[in-house]
Image (cartoon, rainbow, N blue to C red; front, side, top):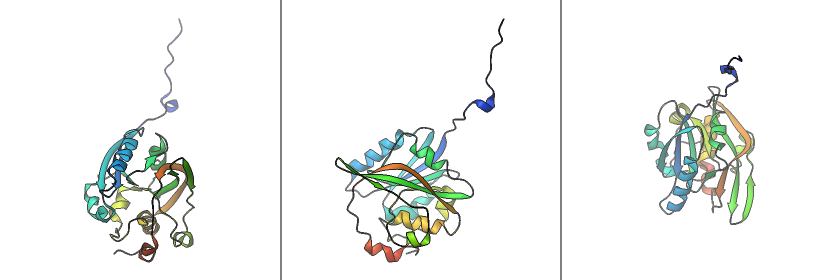
Amino acid sequence: MAGQHIPSRDSVPEHKDRSVTFIILFDSSNQDGLEVTKESISEQKEVNATILECSPQALQEIKKDVPDNSSVVILRSGDRFLSTSSCVELVSELTEQVQCVYCDSIIKDGHDEMMQLMFPFSLSAMSSGYMVTNIALSSQLFKSLAINKNLNFLLGHDLILKSSNVTNIRHLAEVGFLLPSRSINAQSEIPLIGSVN
């Protein structure tokens, strides 16, 4: 009589839901985009989601609503994750040593798609103002950063720069987001990068 085989616990992959707070930056003129982003969040696997919505100017105030010991992912209304595993791939890179992670995106304009390739963090590249991005942070780091209320499109850029002063930053060289094409004029924001107000 053959015995029953019980697999070793070491060989069974662990599927642990991660606590992730999604902060969706929006303005009231883009309600459709807000629903698109919420739907994409609801499709993410292995994620226990909390969704917060605010304008870029209200990001400082929303810190109090972010649960401790969660990861924070900042998106804009209309942004979508590329796949159902994109979020967990991004936040699984967060550690005690690396508390800020960003990745590449695809910008979609009608039927056209353009890669938005980010680069590994460097002060010289960041100062050029090209980096408009979604990011993942530990809740501890997010709550400790000063948010500049005068920034909009370069808000992610600013948070990465400020994070670099207190932790290691990681660029995940994979596409994680599908972004709608937007008209962006960030020239007035470039001089404000790194400042509190």
